[in-house]
Length: 295
Picture 1 (cartoon, rainbow, N blue to C red):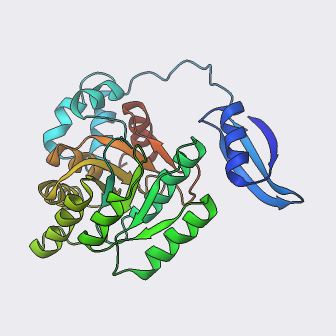
Picture 2 (cartoon, helix red, strand yellow):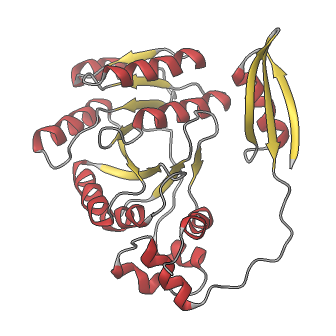
């Protein structure tokens, strides 16, 4: 592992230096205030030149899929060939577009929408494209305060627009070409009135809905939730809590049932490095790492 200290006037400046020198795979191990700014400790794992392990036997693959609660209908296809290739064949993995459409992040209460918005805002600031961040959740004061704190650290202005009319006015003043991230209220998608709230916000902002769904939920429940949000307009999926969830079948069930592309995965509680693009290889790695076939 390669370790290095970086000092800069601010956290974004230090993060930019880490990314420029060590690349996007670098890990932030710690940070502290020092005279004149901040100090970050960053690390980069050395490449693993060991040969890959042999392919698992069919019985091991079957036990792994059963452990994760992968729906029965998906298992035969996931048993064929390498797990990474099978995931790529069955599911869609796509990048999360931040332009040209605004993004409206939707999901259950407590799904991780606010933290996801903060993470994406951090990524965009570090990339030199500060976004417009909008809190559309009037019902949960704590979420707005959390997002306001993140926005302040990043030097961004947080706009409060929980009403479609207020949101439409805010969007009308948006500078051309500016990414927009909107934190929607957590709702019950099976309640027609609450689902209509989301549709009203999406229409007012001409936004694309992104479902934020925590891993570890029951696969049937996850599939039904994703389908309900998709009926309200969600067309992309972000999985959260991938660092703590032991069973990931719920995310696969959601992506399959609602036909939603998998875009990003949330790991940990940090804002700078805890959201990563999901790929078939990364998801296969998490399935193998977290899965322990029954004895």
